[in-house]
Amino acid sequence: MTGSVYGQRPTRDPKAYRDGSDAIRPKTERVVDGAGIEGEVRIRADACVIGTGAGGAPAAKELAEGGMNVVMLEEGKRFTTDDFNARPRDMMSRLYRDAGQVATVGNVPIPLPLGKSVAGSTLINSGTCFRTPDSVLAMWGERFGLDAMGAAELDPFFRRVERIQNVIQVPPELAGQNALVVKRGADALGWSGDFIYRNVRGCIGSGICTFGCPTSAKQHVGLTYVPLAWDAGATTYTACRARRIHTQGGRVKAVEASTAGGGRVRVECDIAVVACGAIGTPTFLRRQELRLDSGELGRNLTIHPATGVRALFDEEIEMAKGVPQSYYIDEFADERIMFEGAAGPPDYAAMSFPFSGESHRELMLQYPGISQFGLMVSDLSRGSVHEHAGLTQIRYFLNKDDVATFKRGIELLCELYWAAGAKVVYPPIEGIGELHDGDLHAVREWEPRPKALTVLAFHPLGTARADARPGHGVVDGDLKVHGVDGLYVSDGSVVPSSLGVNPQITIMTLATRLGFHLLGTAPPEDEPEPEAIARPRITQAHALTA
Image 1 (cartoon, one colour):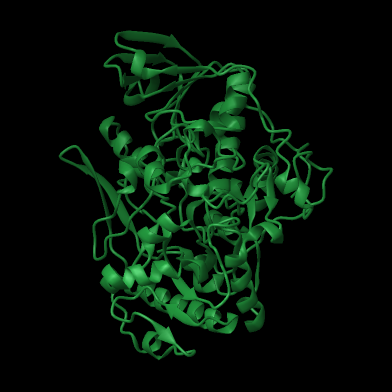
Image 2: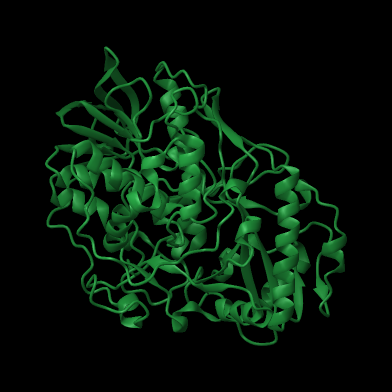
């Protein structure tokens, strides 16, 4: 992947990662704050995009640049760099849905952080960029009839997204010591890994990507696609919650939203693109009382459950310095295990470190020597999303196969830390506590139980999955809702299976493809080829389906 002058700078040139001089700057900001709308506003548009995250913003940008009059509706607020104070405890309540307290209900509660703002969860993610593995796309064709989503067919759209988002590899000198000690362990064991590719311009390694980048280096879609959409004439209405899609004769006619100011916005349109995310989209569509015959809406939820292993070193780590998620290990990807960086500043660590009371205090006092790395399991478990008494309920039970995979991954990551020279290792398993002197016995002898794990998740997918067959999915291969003309879905809910990798580039690519489809234009074959992209070793895609 090249740098900010696409096609001219070499992939591994640190300047390409750090240089933010040619960041996207809109000529005008077309934003209307719904907090100031008390009455009724009526708008005529060609398309209404509901949501401004990884799925909504690229679709809106492509449609607007293609000549359509586009309105974007966003339930949350718009935040800028001036709003970010680099304090995780403050930013959680501002940038995250329900202050970061969204969680699943099941045999183990799993926190599921979601964004609520212009740019959605791209504002609070780690910026990690992986293409959908070719084997996964091939499996989609075989199992879901999505033959037009093959690697060759999606390649020009991937290239377009990677150019706009400035996807570039983390230079080792910005990776941080947390990543480098893990790399040391992986190298000693002969495990496959590499520095991560991220969407950045001008990164200095502030260490707080998930709490609002204080330098605007991380290229969330609020800094890229939304401004490009504004330049093409689109308008964003913030603090506006879509309530109703009006149809007539099986065709979209209008979208209606309530505003934070107590008013109403009605967008008369022929195309509505729902991009509320894998949690918000199924509940929103279900409220529309549409005749969806498959029974799949709200089902098939995958969440990429994750945990972290911590280790104490005699050397200085200082997790707050450098890129938090800067290195990955894919040696065991075909076992549904990916290791990725999971560092952060002291108050972030305090929220996630094990133990309590005096034990927690003692661990925090050793923070400078602590390393932490993440383990993500591509889940075979499946959940569902429903509304009950007006509240969203996410039901998810971690099955025995996934719990066993967690055990395997934790053991491997502990082994890696011993190989890296750790003094003490802290596995995320209740009742084990600390490991010393290269010991793995307690982890190996542990009888897997979901409730003994400390788990969270990041990548909800699948609740309005794409399937060419109307009886097996919610949308077709063009992301059109089966049975409703003019209604499309563009977010993680359409992704039909676990990916094995972080999904933001997949979602943006499918959104870009949707925009070109709705405009009736050919794929952007003139996008330059990247010099390099990350290709995790995932060959057993069948293992990602339940």
